[in-house]
Length: 175
Image (cartoon, rainbow, N blue to C red; front, side):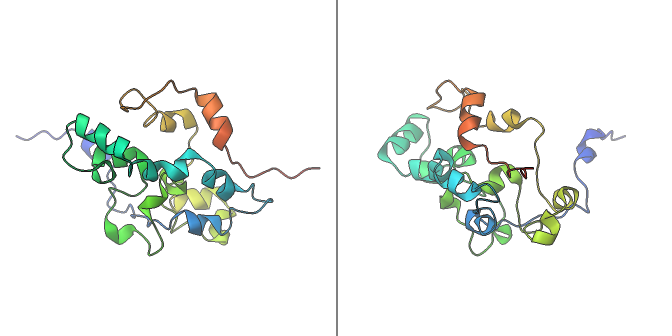
């Protein structure tokens, strides 16, 4: 008799669609205007947009070697998981313009955008979520997946302060 725990099936729905990644520049087509909150500019000015680049330094390679890795930091999965969107995604899901070298980008936090990128979908939050948009009720839970003591370069992480530098909600209409 084989007993299969129910939890093995809780998260695997055969009808789940794998959403494709489009890259920050594609998101920026709509999310760059003042009306939208200039999210693209906020991201470009953040350390997130440069996260992959930090892995291409001699210092990063030295750290990777000290941690026991044989590959350069920019090719080490343990480094890439927090420094590059889409590094562990099936290549068929990466759009032609998607570049992992763009670092921690929109789709790292908001989910692969291919199926919710259209304006008609984005006008409805529920429709966007149905099509792959990820919305976190507690953003800090996402941030601390990388900003934690497992990182060899970890410094104290003050969520409120850090989030204040990158928050990018769409401005509300003024009455």
